[in-house]
Length: 344
Ligand code: CDT
Image (cartoon, helix red, strand yellow):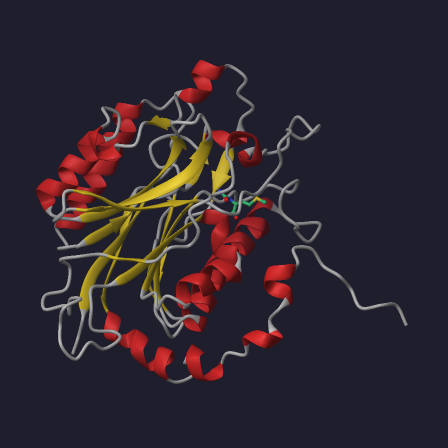
């Protein structure tokens, strides 16, 4: 039985250090409205969508730093962000959106939430596990910094898949007779930017039968102090490579976990000098790109997908239950860094 879903990535162009919250929010609402003209049921916004990607800046003033964070637990009810959720409710579109979270205990997290329009509430929350970059800025004053380890704690909510209700008519519920895999409400998982490069998170979701992975990102096009680039590399070559690697991980991990994925970039030239890649895309369980961004500006990337297409991979090539050999994977959870074999 087909289980179709109309999904969209809301790619955002540059958001500058001094862009106002109101302007950025207005752009997000406009994107949501244009996704609505395509009958999108779910729209994904980028990582840290409401502001510029502030971790590239060393900000020592507490008040200034805090202005980039959302406070309190109720994103859908907070003044800065509420209009986006109100619009989603009005248009009956589920949204997933990334933001900097200041938790009640004072810790910062790089977070995303999933808001169900039919439930009128946030039904799932994820905190970014893999924080790239450094705690201290580089000595080189021209370097692009990525101070996520300074501003955020590593996510502590795990990779917890969840079901999104009321998107698929006739989806099987808990109390149904004859319950079968692949007949219920869509199974989704969130990750944020750098997480997409790590197979472990994908596999955690794969092991929960994930059907759609949502990933917002801010990826520098040219940051030689951060990226392990081949040298010499022009900014254009580095950016092409960064887009290639982005799509590579979305396509290959979708394939290996028999799921769709949608990714949404914050792109473009921020503050006239920080270049972020575009490349927002939707990929299939066979690893194909179904739709992708053509610009580095505000743009909707849309596809109609059939979650039923996840079944053949989950039941054949990647039938985990029949083919995985966990006794042979021990180092994966016992070891972080590399331990080379002894020298000959
Ligand atoms: N935002 C984010 O996680 N960006 C990283 C840049 C990596 S820099 C070492 C990314 O993986 O795209």
